[in-house]
Image (cartoon, rainbow over all chains, first blue to last red; front, side, top):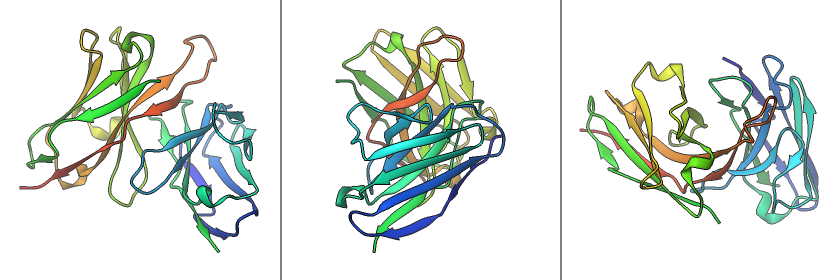
Length: 107
Length: 123
């Protein structure tokens, strides 16, 4: 199985900060890669697919980069509604797997 | 706008079979792949499996052949059955749509999700 490892596991940031979350795959997954945001009691929401493609309706302050094994999600100008848990996920080979999550908290 | 809604018993006894249905509205179930994902309380996400209305399916081997996903095109629904459940199967179960253009090298991603159904395994 492909292991997805996110870093950091949690971070504290202020409104307006630029935040970057990393995700590393245990083997190359090309760009079969997505980022999700999850708020308490809600389903995950797709932010980025294919490593760098912004899903329709998602604010442009979210961006994704990477290919192969190393990926990043950047939030440029953190907003109050962005405090949540973020998950990465690979769809290169089954079983499709998720990272353990990164919790973004208010400083 | 597509909507997905999970339904089914929220309390299941150990050793019995968990059964959930996802009703899809606003889109045809024949146009996509469909998946189940679960999340134990306070934990991360686990892909359970997915299938296409044509019958093509793929399951997480970690569930050791306990899983069956089926599609009912007449009702625009798909279903999950998980047999021989234990307390470890207690989780929020999400149904989700997989977007793909079904072509060589085309991406697959979960673009629409249901709200989730908490299923508790307990006697």
